[in-house]
Length: 305
Image (cartoon, rainbow, N blue to C red; front, side, top):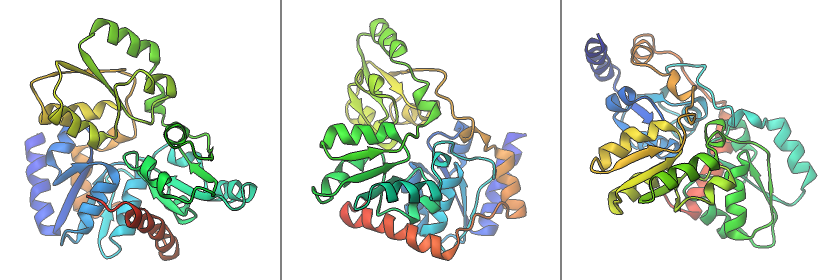
């Protein structure tokens, strides 16, 4: 049955001149049918550079919004409109306006894991891989508001020593990874290298050998092989890690690091999206224009490789 669905998807993809994007946290079968698998911003940049008319974004809503912002002439579809990001939803545009009013003169840096409306009110966007470098590039005499992820923000604060005020948002999947679990796994597997995403809490980050984005983890295990790796991020990353380096052992730091929203996309829903051309993700032009400015400023300071 799955093979029949995949064949129908491939046929419709050609008919629609579509490109399928899948985040690394998507189910393995979704990653397998994708034209591109990767981090959220990288996927949107890749898609913008194609001649596709349609983008099917297998991820969560803020990712599809970013694709729509960077590809205003393309039709962006998300296979499940209910695939949201709780962390992105932890700050609204109105809350950000109030936060900014309380800290006049501060620059606002929004993690790319944020809504289009929040990006539109920001001075800069950042990713988990470039947040430290971005903040280091900003004027030293300016305070910084970092939204919405306090864990990534605190990592940046510790690395840069900058005056950063954090919004109390977090990724549920990452905060469920507990330091005692990591300590137990380190004791059981003393040969293992611990890789953690900076969305993890500080006690978990303190136990890591390297703090890396998902894309950086893939590069790390390929270029710096080890007998085993303890992986402290969402479980979906295990699939591409095994593809990049299948000769080692990958140990999840927690089986609880599971994002239900990322797993809402299925092969059937991808097929239905292409059949019905639903659900179309659109960002109002004014919001998209302002959000793109924040993204463009980031790329101007730190060009994408």
